[in-house]
Length: 174
Image (cartoon, rainbow, N blue to C red):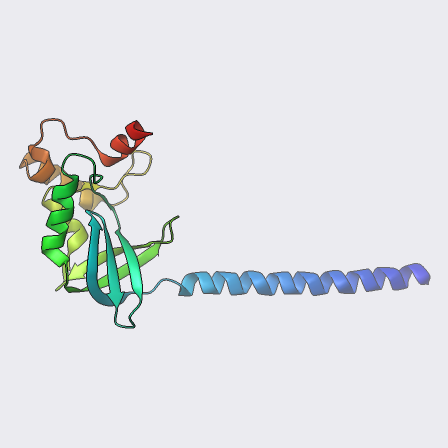
């Protein structure tokens, strides 16, 4: 009888712990999906060709990394031109951000719209950014088409005979 009581006590404690763990997992999953939300705000700083700071209507500063593009680094050829071009498009303007997720630096990864114009696409189309690739693969095929067209028309950084992709530039700087 003593062993059955011990077994029942251990089983009850284990079930309580499992129930708590399960509840925590559900809360974590729910909070993770609710974190990402589209928002509007004013562009208060253009950091580089693919990163900006936005002041939301609730007066929160949000750093946004433009999704699906990769602009030249600041110290790289066309890095400053890319930043300046993005600034001409959206600096001090009210924009809408369609947030996708957060990156490893806790920046919002999103698509920026100004009057329904996709600014991310505009950067690639105008030759001031590449279609973003992860391990050599681009997820957004539209960006690849825009990049190819900009390259064929020698727009922006594609005027350079041997432009260096930002991921190669970063790799070479290590």
